Length: 127
Image (cartoon, rainbow, N blue to C red; front, side, top):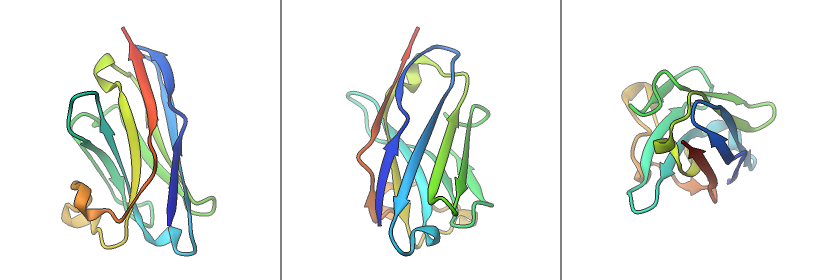
């Protein structure tokens, strides 16, 4: 499985961006997909995860109420809609795939649960 994140860019505070994660591979639709982010000088932080079916999601505290994850398995793509962006959202955003993650059991919040990672896309929010 290979992942490619795209859609990052520069946006003003209060604005919106939609990130996409293209997932390729014969079993792409069987994986839970998570988003993490890493700001300069900080550790990678969990943002949100969606299960393989697209029906169960789990959000990190920083994303609740502002970000929405969804997936289109017909297109092998996961979307992260980010609204009301703040300067502290500035980071490189990574998508990752985990085959054994059970989202309803609080899975998907740790990096070591994911087998495959994309290269990341930069999001910069100006004040």
